[in-house]
Length: 266
Image (cartoon, rainbow, N blue to C red; front, side, top):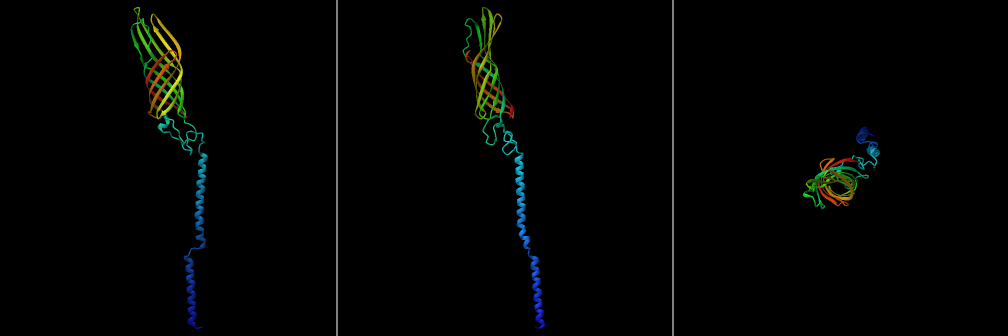
């Protein structure tokens, strides 16, 4: 074999070895490319585990469903102004509630509507059917439309005066109701009331001295109230009401403004 052929083969061999070495340096190793997807998958798996553990931690910290101040997700419940006064079904609540204790104090005008039978022998008679009544009502408001409570107050039902044998006679009749009251919300902010119980009838006669008498009469009442909230705990209501003491046949119609105080919520 000639010398130039041996040199040419040696050049070919060196060139081939050089190209192979360069190609191996440029191409990424198979172990690296195969490890990349598994590393990304491991990172994703760790993130999922952290999320699951955090969710379980939130579940363990969430209050029990017996806490009416929290939602199902464990968040603190904030009632809107309308929810503070009106009872409406709430599908997000985990249990019953809230319950409220409402206090009503009313002042207005009353008109005695029953026949006023004054003595025929009384001369120069002057009759007064109008008065300024006061009422106090305490209601327990449940998470349904029905409410229950008690009501009392004071109403000067009527009075009349005149002369008899030259002497002045003055008669005043008032009542203090003691009623068990039931209420139902009809539409938003409007409710109907109905109650029954005894009326304490007080009479005062000023004629040749002072004579007082007290009697009790069973009776009933009906009322309609529209409440306008003024804040979280205070509201103002317009109320029309009918008192009827059945046994003594005394009845009066009342229109009054009522201050409503939401004393307690649980």
